[in-house]
Image 1 (cartoon, rainbow, N blue to C red):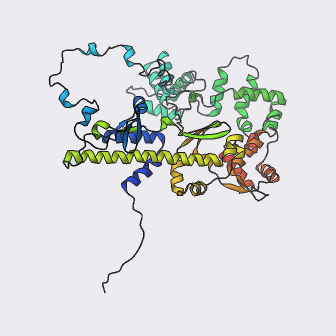
Image 2: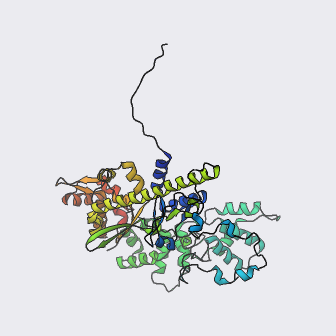
Image 3: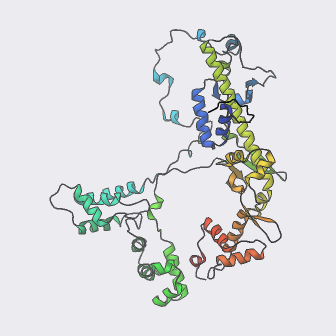
Length: 500
């Protein structure tokens, strides 16, 4: 085997730590960015949060903080040891060695309810910030009612086992045999629990609130709710019979068969259906302790003087700056370990601030470019949405498609029409008979509009919708219409049929 040396010329992209950090920040959502900033603040002494007073006093850039209130400019990259005194920052020499400790805690902090209130200037600012549902979980609500019942120890154990087997929708997931076996397994009594005892306690559970809880299927759930209605309720008897005998036929819209079997007219059936629709098929859904989730828009879009203006949400952009006190402690010609550590932290802080600025600038550019191409949507709605792909924005801004994908992922835009994810404005296209293109979002909007205007007794089929779209110049197949309809969670025509 012969060994030889060869020279090759090639190009290779090296991902520097700064570039990796910028890319990572670019794809983070607002919540994730907030956590990332907090982690960096905890690990880097040179960075600190910028409060409102500091924002009015300083202009910030990647090099640090520069005073702007008096027209003076001071850069805090480095300096000598006299800088802290010039800034009026207390040094360790100003702090006495023996601090007074004879003061009591109550003399300094007033232990009142006011101390735990909101710290903002508005007294009622925090009233609704931490509001949680007071209803609690369904299990807690049922156990509270069980404790009010006059039950024996054995019946109480059965009742608790039944409550534990009820899911979040209010239905009993376990069979009565499984409940019996579970109680007998944990019961020390000599006489085992019989199935009739479990059935008797279940009837007591099913009489609790909410109405319909503890049912084993939809039919039983509806019948339990009917039993709690006054006997004078109109169409109650017929509605109960419909649920007992024709619930499946009602679900499949076999109205003619139901009217023929019950010997009732269309008006009576409409009254029965209206009564059934007042019931709750998921009685446990009103209980739960999950907090509400809120979306924080990254970009605001508003129309001013006839033009659409795009701006970043200031609350979603982290405001951090370089701490001037620690920056002033750096000595340029000092290579001691402590000074080298300060220099390293300062450089990392500059990189981080620059990455944050790059993220904001890129997000603003992409959002502005999207708004320029989707002005018709902002003016007229979904039906005016234009086809748009990542390549279009990337080519206009001179960026890579992967960068556009990172920017538009989990970023939200607040518009007069609502809050949308940036990816919502990107959609595929379908060719038209005039040689143009129609956005899939616009086609879905047209389909939704056609279905909303259809006759309820004769709903439009997917083939009929495709024919109507074809007459409007939009060439779509029936399968495409079905796919768009299912994506909008609209049932097929046979399930949309209603009585006229």
